[in-house]
Each structure stands twice: as C-alpha cells, then as structure tokens.
Length: 396
Image (cartoon, rainbow, N blue to C red; front, top):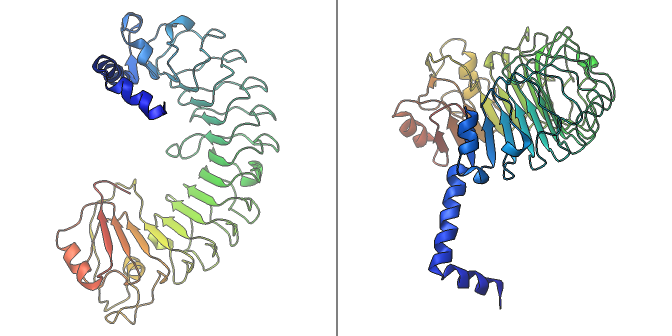
C-alpha cells in the first residue's frame, strides 16, 4: 500500500475527517493566546493547543501551568517575584521578557531555548555560563547597559542585537575583543557616545546595523571587510572616505545623519548594488556609483507629508530632488544627473508630485511609499512603455 492510499482511506472516513478538521480549527483558533488572570489561564479548556503563549499575569506561574505545546513564551506582565529555577519547560524554544528585571541564573533558562529576547527594563549581569549553549538568537533591549565578559555570549549565537532601531542608541559599554563570538553573522547595536574602535566587531559579521552617537567619525578599518549588508542611522559624525568597505553590497543611510557636506565620489563604494538614503541633500553628482541597480530615496518613517512639485524643465539652478529623479532626456539634456543608468528600480518614500519626463527611461520599476494624484500613472506611462509601477498604502 502506498502512503497516499493510507491517507485517502482515512480521509474518506467521514468521522476521522471531521475529527481532523475539528482539531485543525482548534489549532488555528488557539495558536496564539494572551491571558491576564491566572484563573482564566488555568481554566482555559484548549490550553493544549497553544503554541505561542503571552503571559500577561502579575502572579507567578508554576512549571505545570505551561502546556507542553508551547514553543514561544512571552512574559509581558510586571511579575513581582523572580522566576524560580527550572520553571520554564524544555518545550519552549523562544523566550521573551517585556517588563522583567530580576537577576537570572544558569537554571533560569532551559537548555533547549533557541531565541532569547529581552526588551524594556531588563538590565541584569549576564555572567559566563548563564546563557545556554543552545542559544542562536539574542536580543538585549533598550535598557540593557551592563558590561559583558568573554564567553558570556555563547559561541552558538548567530544573531545578536543591542537595543532597537528606534532607540537611537543606548548601549554605553566598551565591547572588548572576544566578547562577541565569531559565530555571530548578524550584529545590531544601538550605542551611545563610544567609538567604533571600542566595539570589536568580529570578521564573521556579514550584516551590520549601527544606530547611535559616536565621539569620532567612521574611519577606514572600523567596519570589517566581511560585512555585506550595512545600515547606519542617527550618526552625529561624518563618514570618511573608504570607511565603508568594498564588501558592502546593500547600504542604508537613515537620518538624522550628521554629514556636514554632501557625499563625495568615494564615500559609497562601487560594490554597492542596493542603496537606501533618507536625506537626498547628501547626494551630489556621481556620488551614486554605477553599480547601484536599486535605489530608495526618503525615510519610510518620516512624518513629513508636505508635497513637493517636480517639474521636467529647469530654468534656474535645479533642486536636489529634480537632479535626483532626472536622467538623460530630450527636454533636460542640460541637467546633470545623479542617478546612473544602472538603476532599474527606484523607490520613493517622498511625498512629491510627478509630471511627465520626471523619471529616467532607464528605470523599469517605480514604487511609491505614499499616495499620489491619479493622473500620475498616465503621464509617466506615456513616456515609459516598459515601466512597472507600484503604489503602496504605507511606507516601503
């Protein structure tokens, strides 16, 4: 008998089929649940179907309270006592602390945990040996500001985050060599008033996100040559020439960004194929290398909704936005272009009004982060027969 024969023999049995559909429905309805009272939690009839549990109860729970089906446990309440040792079952793979700030020990975490995410308030020492060797994903929240010793982070961790993208820098400790293990490939740090030389970024990192303030400009050699994806935000010092290594292929620069002058030709390396930049005033002639095929302009989190008008003909000195969007065109031959012909995809998180001849004919995909006037599609489509346009409800 083939496996399919066994399946169909079960499926054709109406009773078994109804039972399967019934339990699948229960799994869907109870996959993720949040509780705010202990009585409600303990009396819940379908607790064994819960996979993602949000514990929003101020009272402490027992190990028996957590169903064996739970793989993700979020403790979002203000628990008044620290967790007991071995209270979290071994079935939990992802553990999240929202408002928890008590000392932790080696027995706080199960040996099977893969992801540990601690957000607001947690600021406790993590001595070597506390975090389990099964851990691969570690996020330390905005409040965390404790020094770390070598071996405090297990050599199994591949994703490591300090703070968040929106905290704009909070970590103020020097990261000594060997603190971040060579297993880490994705590193995100929101730091405050320290130099990149003090971060000791290992050469295993291929994706690097840096948010915050520093006391020195970004210099060559501070970002390792292993980095391929680089995101910089809220820097109060400029980027020096060749500070961004030639290994970077995807580069994102988000404001506020204290670059005192527009980018020169050598700031963005020729290895970059995808470029995102929020402040278009930093762009100059030939500052975008010809290797770039995807370009994002504007900040998707910006609250600026004032519409700008983009005209195809320029009688006086063109605005920076007009320079950015124009390329070789019979009506604008005298205008120097900022977008190289290599760019095929253009994403605009800018609330602007476009008119005919505003978009280069080399661009084949145009995406808007906010709503535009209805006649824009017709005007642009007449000039670009092969242009694909995408209008998004929110920012891209």
